[in-house]
Image 1 (cartoon, rainbow, N blue to C red):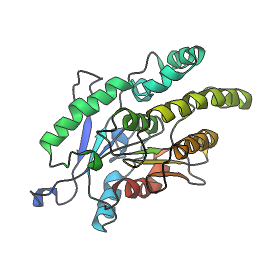
Image 2: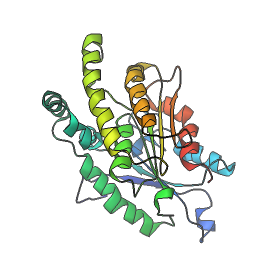
Image 3: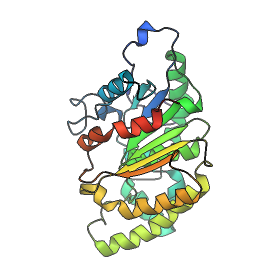
Image 4: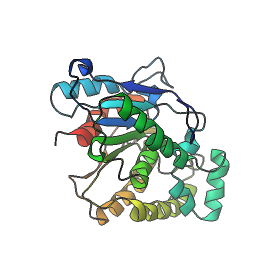
Length: 275
């Protein structure tokens, strides 16, 4: 799909079973990043898929979720720059900002990527399919860097998205320092100060949205605990309550599609529970 705001990319739209048999029915929409990894292992980057279609079909059939249309937005070679929140980069100290932009290859492109979703892709989806287009029926989800951009989408477009699920959120943003404990601690403290600042400033007020985080404790996820606990405390400090905000830990879970597949029911039921 071409865009005036971002790189052209493929988009996969999954329609639920029975869509063509109920011409008057309208559906909520779940937008998901890294779309090539969601439905078909043969197209997935690492040969493993989330199994989104199977999970959604099963949960819908048993009445555990409101049946959605799922829009899988494929990534591009500029994934890192498209997924890193621009408000976070702006909040970093100058030396950290320069460091991250050197690693990522330039300035963040996340504002353009979100404009593509909100101004081009969503209107196309709403014109083409029988959606329920309002905020309460529009959610966004992603993993790793996709978790960061999902959070940013909720902060940047709170009138568009009613919920966000951020799976194995890649808070450290710089992988190179993770093996050095002292460097990680220094990086984490400065970065967390920036993260908590933008969350406190830009997160929508409590009561109108749903926000989900999770993490494992193996591979890359092993580095997320301290970041996540400070973010969680910040969000709870803003008055978000358990019915609207959830942050979970899955012991033994790794940072990969197989682990996300295993626990996908949890964020789906949180975002799409009947209400």
